[in-house]
Length: 170
Image (cartoon, rainbow, N blue to C red; front, side, top):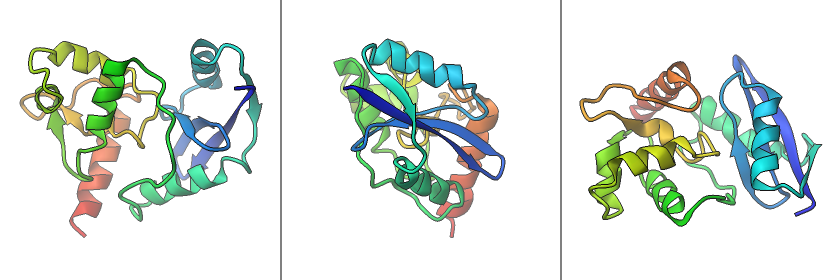
């Protein structure tokens, strides 16, 4: 892979860096995260790639994410290129099965993937998810329903869950 393209998605009070190839979304960053977060992730996962700004190429990804943030979209249609371990991929695919507006616990995911003793490993895999929003790790809560860690921060997680709760009722 020679080039990975990036753009800063700006919508209302949302500022998210995204990275993709012409064919697949690779990365959605945290709210108000610096550019170094995406550049360091690309260096680590794609050491031979060049990072190139190209907002036009990433416009379709941004359009769907904005529709989601506006409550007009409950699922994404763009293809995603998952870059992780086999276990992480298993967990991330399980996250994609959580319906819009609903939450699950870490142990729910561990049971879903038939690894009930792997709750901590599930938590680590969720924390390594590079594609926030599109792979909905924000839908994971603690056993008692409390908000727990989130790479984007608890404020971002709370905003996303409120958005989904509000729009799931419409």
